[in-house]
Length: 81
Image (spheres, rainbow, N blue to C red):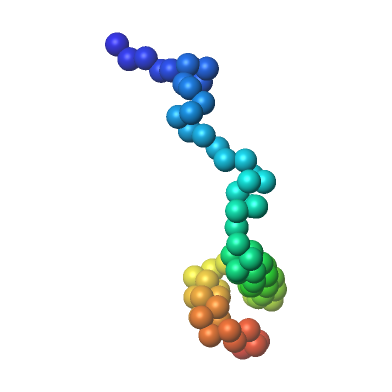
């Protein structure tokens, strides 16, 4: 016979979650700078992709996906027809 433990039967120390503020406070200055630059570049890439998909008719086809991957690798977001 099997038994599924109720969440109240599992001690809290089995899967402790660190406090969010404590985790942020431990990060060094270089890590915070890196994270900020990374997030900025990620948001910029998402905007470029959204703009490109919009210009391509709003549908992501195999060709559009291929062009997006090529443009992400080269950084060339100029309009080609």
